[in-house]
Image (cartoon, rainbow, N blue to C red; front, side, top):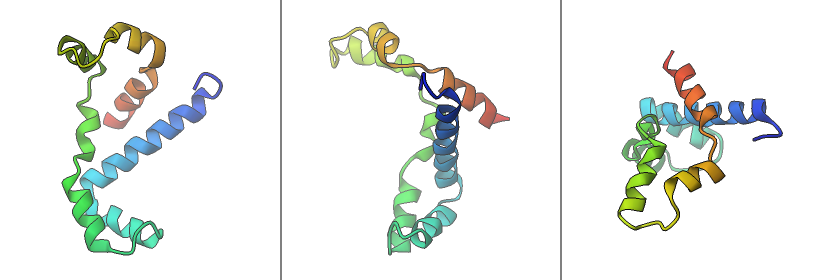
Length: 100
């Protein structure tokens, strides 16, 4: 990410646009999966795409990690995890762009 910020942003944007396609147009996404050779069964692909909540990324809040720490599910403080291993600028910026 640090070495290729523009490429990173493009990849994040592409992944999030694909998630939006799966959430908003599961039939089209299922057809693309079959046509691309990822699966042979359109009906299975459509069922999976219809049941999986692909649009939840818009609601994700990285500070929810605090709740995992409070519930003692993780030992490391959320601030340390976020500081050491996460740079949310790209995701937040792409979220703003995709809302427009």
